[in-house]
Length: 325
Image (cartoon, rainbow, N blue to C red):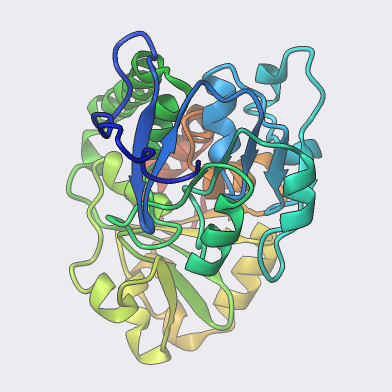
């Protein structure tokens, strides 16, 4: 049984009872899914759920390829949680999930919270095992890391543990805000150089990271992006990048700086003239953590990002903020 409780049974209350009692029902974009007992074999078809699973003591049997830089798609910020277990199998997702491979793994539950799962894929996956799709409250690939952690806590019957993990990271954010009062109310944007300039909107976890640090996003950002997690902006909207701090996710800092320097329109912005840019290199563990934005990657990321942001907000002309590894 993959969705709603069987005929004649009363639907369980939202969330598991204290102590991890089952069944538990999870609502999502395509309805609701009931999980009858604690899952032992978990497959993730979303891109970052493995971190929450590992933080809660469960090693997934398979993850889905996204970054492709680490064995099992387990970053260095999370690999210590594997214990003696081997790395998960990595599934491909080019035109949709690998349904036959997933079925062969005999999962107890399939999780796709940080995903763009289609209804067609959900229906097929639900024939294999109970499947939890992305929540309907957020855009695809827009679920906050807190919600991912809490939902996985519910799936595993470990809500209390999940809540403690979330609180621990939120306490870390509070400490950073207290130590860096200049972040409060300053404006910031995260972008990458892709088909021009690609800017992340308020629904994206990377932007939520910035607001959690006290920064504000441009009021007209979502008007330019729409209801997606991010979008390319036209040359006429380069003004969206002119903020107190601008975080560039680039191949290398040198490459990014060279491309930006060749753009006369961008070079004329205050953020460029005052060197308020932060360069995060994609090929580093730090760069990958910036995209993950999970309960495990965030402490690793904040150690590196916060000093860069502090330097950028200070606006030291002629001194570009050095990339971290």
